Length: 229
Image 1 (cartoon, rainbow, N blue to C red):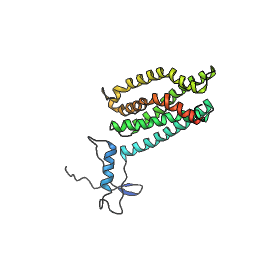
Image 2: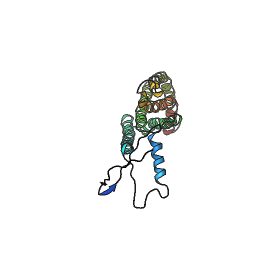
Image 3: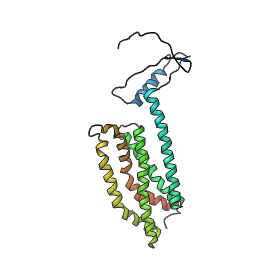
Image 4: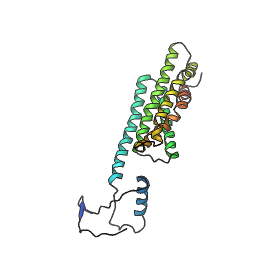
């Protein structure tokens, strides 16, 4: 480390004197670096009482983008729920379908934790996509269920039979999506590491999609309807 003396200059931001300190990150992620910076600067005697610091640059841009993506994620959940209410005109069906992507979120967090990937903007995009993917598969299941009801089958038997009828196509589409994203998740090929977080998030949600849609969702739907009769 060498100290270089430059030309004296006073810089102001919003009429306050400001000193810009920049740096480059090498060999580690942005989140852990920012935590270390905060810990160091919050130490006793690091900054005078009349001085404060603000974190800008790439970190500030990331936080702005993260908040915007969180708003999109919440809006997506709300719009999907309203669409389900309009489609089925049944609160139990809408809630049962929405539980599946919400539970898939837990699998996404688990997958990111197991692979040592921090929750970032790319992973959040994968979580938003999981909401649509799992909801779409759930709608296919309920379409089969209502078709069986129109054929005169009782509700309990129709729920089980709908799962049997849809198990093979759901399994095939899920495996196809996982295999297609696997090279990205393993960071194989040039530039694939940029989308690794997205692939890991989607694959983690897809891994529990089948039991959620075929088992958990029908059980919850019957419970919300007043039990298995």
